Amino acid sequence: MSVEHPGRLGSVCGAGATSEAGPVRYIQGMPTPCTNGNSALDVVVIGGGPAGSTVSTLMAQQGLMVQLFERERFPRFHIGESLIPETYWVLKRLGMLEKMRRSRFVKKYSVQFANASGKHSAPFYFWDNKPHECSQTWQVVRSEFDAMLLQNAREHGVVAFEGVRVRDVLFDGERAIGVRIQEDGGKTRDVHARVVVDASGQSGILMNKLRLRLWDPLLDKGALWTYWQGAYRDSGRDEGATMVLQTGDRKGWFWYIPLHDDRVSVGVVKPFDTLFKSKRPHEEVYLEEVEHCVAVKQRIAPGKRITGYFATQDYSYRSTKVAGEGWVLVGDAFGFLDPLYSSGVLLALRSGEMAADAIVEGLKKNDLSAEQLGRWGPVFNQGVDRMRRLVCEYYDGFSFGQFVKRYPELSGTVTDLLIGDLFTGRVDRVWEPMESMYPPGKQGPVRWNEGQSPSEEVKRNELILPAGPRP
Ligand SMILES: Cc1cc2nc3c(=O)[nH]c(=O)nc-3n(C[C@H](O)[C@H](O)[C@H](O)COP(=O)(O)OP(=O)(O)OC[C@H]3O[C@@H](n4cnc5c(N)ncnc54)[C@H](O)[C@@H]3O)c2cc1C
Image 1 (cartoon, protein in one colour):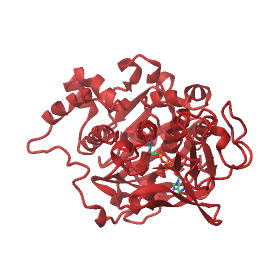
Image 2 (cartoon, helix red, strand yellow):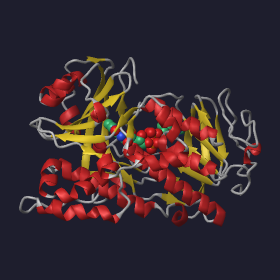
Image 3 (cartoon, helix red, strand yellow):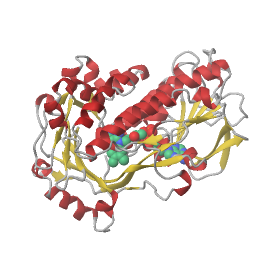
């Protein structure tokens, strides 16, 4: 086991590993994946998004030999641009804070909601609730952010490959023993490791293979979005605010996320059928929604659309298991929650962090059981449940403005949820007051796992990218 071997980098296969002392950068040329049985590698990670980069960096920091396989070549487009403050703590562990401060990403200090009639809630300023530098976060262009995270992983000793697709996870009985990879459409090869981490995002390689995906019974939305230049921007500490603007028919919401280079990401999320069932052109549907949402219409009026229309189903789902013998799921490969409160990257980072610590401990104890590798799962799931409850309440008529007016003493706790402080029971004190505002007979939302069984799966979250430029 290589946990206690500081000279681990010397034993990485292939070109590119050049130093035994400092961090190794794989800037030019590609190292060759280790395929020599399971002697050298501790962990293979599938996918180089935020979850994959996080889990690998934190394991490499603690001395593990990690190889990561990413099918795309970075920078590549991805949606998920608004960070929330609790990402700060993981970014700090990753050694990313200074890079974020030096970046061009727009600083975000708050989130604000507007209802269907255009009435705005007071902004939820993170700093007012927690006066600490973590209360300033960022609006990121994901192609740039993800490339920074992956490069940072390399600087910590992770051997990361781009253009290499994982075709399958290899098992010996119940135990995962490695992955089958394919480089740029060439021949397949097997790479063995003691632990396999699936961070393949919505592809959910292991979730599909083992039929673990449960679709959420309530959160069956779709999203349609595009990018504008020169659209309205607030100023001062509101310049980087995420705006959540309810659609005219109250069935969904728009995100309005200011990015650098005077661009704004503006998307609508609604029940899948309302956006896509008619099969009308995306532009027609989008502009119709804009027409019925005065606040968005006014904001984009001075702007020019600079990309085509992006679309995706974003049905929420979760895996019924977080880990098995020798394998772990992180990020969207473990679960995806409706993007209403911009929690996806935080959940990718936090699950990556929790999984990394469990793997390092497991390798030290020589315990790679499901219990050890997934010991963080229950706490993590509880945190996701809290965010999910807030999402479901919103779709079911919850108004932040009215709630805070009735329970001003809970404004800070609501802000705690919005910043992603999800893994503590302290925030649970909002639920009873929320229920007290229910109309007679209304029940709380059903749980995520009260839907259909995995064998009844019929859905797929497909991303449709337009031709032309993508941020
Ligand atoms: C409409 C919408 C809006 C969103 N808005 C926000 C937001 O504002 N803020 C926020 O925090 N989150 C948002 N999200 C969620 C966010 O996009 C995800 O939660 C986040 O990207 C998850 O990170 P990840 O690393 O788990 O997965 P990903 O970022 O998807 O990374 C997975 C990586 O795995 C690679 N991969 C897949 N299959 C293979 C394979 N077979 N072999 C090798 N590599 C593979 C992929 O190429 C990809 O790079 C939004 C999501 C949607 C759908």
